[in-house]
Image 1 (cartoon, rainbow, N blue to C red):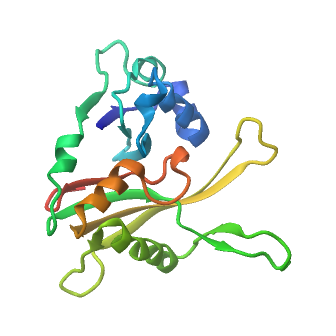
Image 2: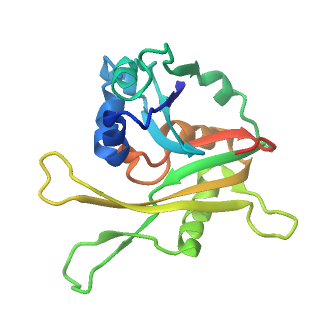
Length: 226
């Protein structure tokens, strides 16, 4: 597995196009792999997430194979300065995860529930959680099965902040109706309870809409500034 970081140049027209459509960004990310096995392999898949630090958008990618983002540098980076992207092996970090460790984490997800419309004969549909409490409980319920516990502070509140709640609507190639997804970013502190289960989350994602920039959880030292 590999972890990749790429800074986007917001001044570039293609960069604005990528930032404006998860469908377009997904296609650009997948174009960075020459072979199918480089982006999907043995239950592991390519995940990506857009973060914004200050006013700087940053693309993170976790993938089974090493990506080549030359096309992104040319379209949405700084091709004349020599700045490219940073890719490093991820397996060593994953292997070092152990029960009891504490990590700061970030996750952008698509918290949803299955429900039935008013018509009792209709098929169930997915509905996005809209309140902070609903979105919080969505993640809390998924913590234990996925090998981690969200820690609490001295005030007994969850060490968890939700931000960047957005509703995105975009076209999909061949689709008659636009795709609409509700996303939220979680920042918090976790403790490792089942390293193997947590490794699966870090390499396969959590929740739905993974093709559209959701599901990638990353870890950092618990005392690191986010």
